[in-house]
Image (cartoon, rainbow, N blue to C red; front, side, top):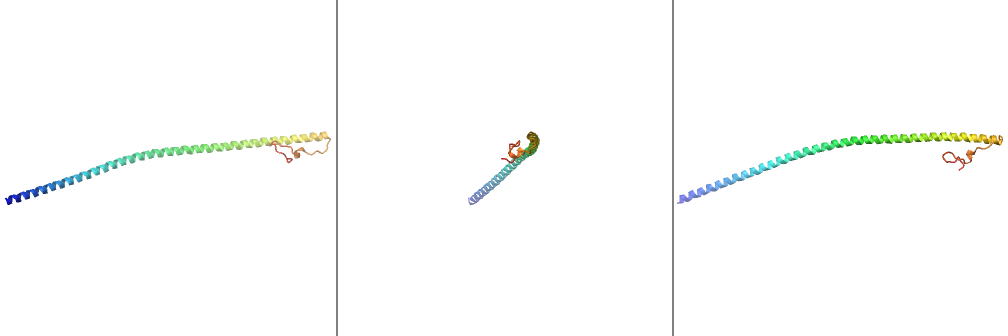
Length: 149
């Protein structure tokens, strides 16, 4: 019976060791499974991130092309506006020149008329010396006085 007890104790120890070994194997399997799941999640996340990056990159490339097109359009528009401004300045300068030329012609005609008036007046007065009226505040075509005002 002592021997029986020893065998029973030995059998129990073996069963405990076997249970402990099974538990250890189960723990190792569980740890390996968790590690594998973690690696799979990381792989899926990496694939998703790579896909997201590709999508973002494609979007940024499209946006960049759109901005480049917008830049070119705006540059063309700036050129058009500069051309319009130059054309407007040229037209304004041309109009000023035409007005100045007309004014010069009108002033020249006024001087001619004043000379004629002066000559007529001298003829009427019998050749006496008459001072010209233009120094006495007569206005030119612009409404400005010639010294009298």
